[in-house]
Amino acid sequence: MSCLERRIAQGRGDETADLVLRGGRVLDLVTGDMIPGDVAICGDAIVGIGEDYDGREAIDVEGLILVPGFIDTHLHIESSMITPLEFDRCVTPKGITTAICDPHEMANVIGVEGIRYFQKASEHALMDIRIQLSSCVPSTEMETAGARIDAEDLKLLKGHPSGIGLAEFMNYPGIIHRDPEVMDKLRLFDGQHVDGHCPQLSGRDLNAYCSAGIRTEHEATTAEEAREKLQKGMRVLIREGSVSKDLRALQPVLTDLTASYMCLCTDDRNPLDMAEYGHLDYMIRTLMELGCSPLSVYRAAALSAAEAFGLKDRGQIAPGRRADIVALGSLENCDAKLVLCAGKVADEAAFSRRGQVEPVGLDSVRAPTVRPEDFRHESKVERTSVIGIVEGKIITEHLIENIPVKCGDKRPDHARDLARIAVVERHGKNGNIARGFVRGFEIKRGAMASSICHDHHNIVCVGIDYSDMAVSVNRLAEIKGGIVVADGGAVLAEIALPVAGLMSLEPFESVRDGLLELRNAARSLGISLEEPFLQMAFLALPVIPSLKITDHGLVDVDLFQIIS
Image 1 (cartoon, rainbow, N blue to C red):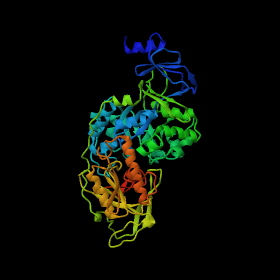
Image 2: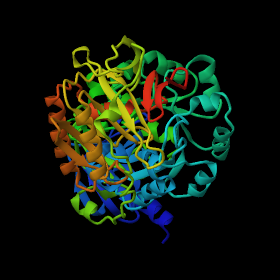
Image 3: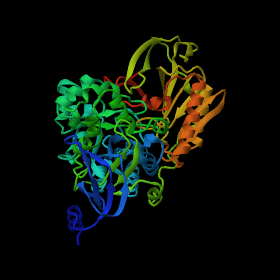
Image 4: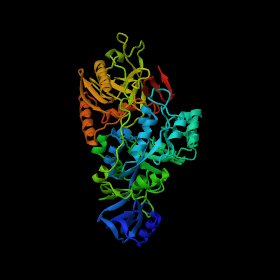
């Protein structure tokens, strides 16, 4: 009997089901009804609901509510600082059964090899890791990345089973002004899914961007922005990462009416937040606490997400759909008691049976040795552009301050919350060092540095003391990338991230504990931000308004140009 015939036979009850979930109730995301009865599964597919079934194996889910597995519609697994398979082990038990991933962090460091690494990992994961092909490597020409990916490279990467289209197209000026290289990439994916990225774009420019066929967008930070993007045919992805916290701003837009066109994503979420708060489960709980209906929230987390990305085989507990199922104690608590991925129970035994993938990019940090004097900001003019942090956002303010020049150097001033920020090129290409000022860390002494530096992933460093800045940057080269906090000429805390300078080879629990030590060390320097390390990393991303810094210098993102 063929697989197709077996599914039909088991759905009708002519043949015993492979697996039956018995005693629960199914939340139907189309009608909103609670459906009592068994759920029958044949292989990786649901074949029956709402009836009594016999099964070769049965799992008692008495008193539990069954919902479809959750879909994270946009994330960079690298920001979790753990490998894709370790990420799988970490978040699948929370109910996330599909992750739509853009590996452009790895791609910006080691190029095509980084994307292929993720594709190989997807073949072994318990969850379904879908790999979008990175569209903007580098994100702009105003930075030095470790690699470049053009349309011909993307053509070679197409066709993998994990493929789902072209990842977030950050170069929105390139689309609006029809840059030839940009047009080549869009034509390659004509008629396929292309993910969006257009913060604060509005009016005719947004019309032009949508006309390129882009239908999903995760950069809306206000209800007004989200509403306009919905009106112009975009699916809005509500984002709640470790730095970009847009859930509360967008929550009023999520209703039973709009839920079919809204989804959930984390974008960049670190292990501490995943351990202390959760992942998509945290977003689901919080949205309901803020007043959204369970139907609207669970629809956005599953069915709407599947529809938005063309995943017609999932998103609803219904016959013929993929058996991605989460059994909850209650809808309000979103407390996963049992998770199935394609009909397999997500437990330690299942994780231990997975294959492994050899790490790549283990020698990617080729930064020059720096000296304290390399962080001087030589100038004769007091008027100075300053990056202003907006906590909970990756957008920044473009501030202007008068900073005195002493012995040809404009020095950091902790009393005015003016810290030095520097970006050191680490790919071994030109040795660039750019310097500027940032306000918002409230750092009083010492320094911190990281090889997580979006999206080019050079080394970014923030500090008050030049010697401590040199200590932290040089230490990163010794440990092959990671995060370092230094004070008084010594390293206070560090974590090594040798996989392309972005991910650890250690278990999730070790990375979480290391980050906790780093956070405590940062607080000892006076730093007040809840997540200072990712916040620092995003200060180097030149596609998010308004003022950023790369190894080329300060970038006025509104003008899309380097400023002196």
